[in-house]
Length: 158
Image (cartoon, rainbow, N blue to C red; front, side):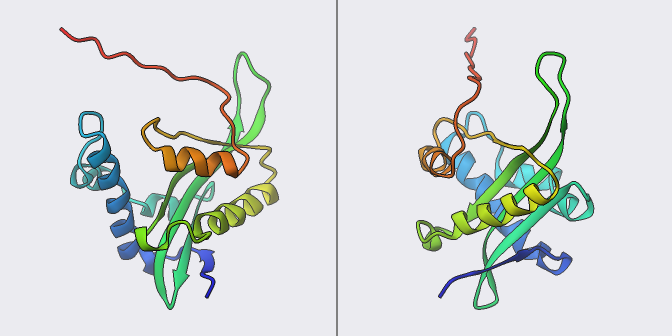
């Protein structure tokens, strides 16, 4: 059975915050030196801000009336002193419950948000993915997102 993909509603907030917690916990577990704990992030960030902002969007994937994943994004005009202006969007979070991964749910969420972004006149989508998250890198490459800039870091040890 295919999931239902729909826009998130205010009544979804409890479940969405729970999934957001899992997403941030996975990042913290992968790289505890860089990422705050999910509890720390939860105190500072809520998915509710996306529901209140007309330039943001949240879609959920639902199976048997249970939310199994979500995607968030926002759009704006990118204005730069060095590059041409463009209507752009970012995918900010994408999370699927572990037992539903690799079943096409993320692809369906991406297709839905991409369609809405096109309707708003967006020309390009950007996403930031940490290097350790090989599964996400592979997924986004399959969705047609390719590297366009290298963002490098170097810790300075004392």
